[in-house]
Image (cartoon, rainbow, N blue to C red; front, side, top):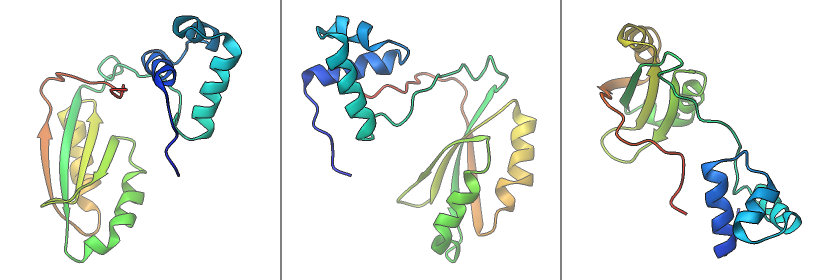
Length: 155
């Protein structure tokens, strides 16, 4: 998919949408110096081009009971590396896995996992993650403090 061309006004609109996706086109237009209709058309163009992937809310995981955040490096067996897509399909089925990234280097995947507590992660690790075929090694790192978290790109 070709990249969409964006100008300074588009960037202002995108920054506003990132910080608060509930803003109306009229409110955004007012803040950037456009009327509602041209602002709405720009936002629609972003959606149609796939620039805006989804609109949602970001929840406080701790207030919802997910105290534990773990980063797991997963190394597949040499034979398992031919089944990267299969591993990805399986991982997508685990609601505890918030992110999964295929890496270059000495490990194959980086996972960000959330659970209510250490015992829940231990169950997830022993009963699900480590039981996947072709998983050779998992190295888990527990996040102590979240220093920075954002979903906003530096537009």
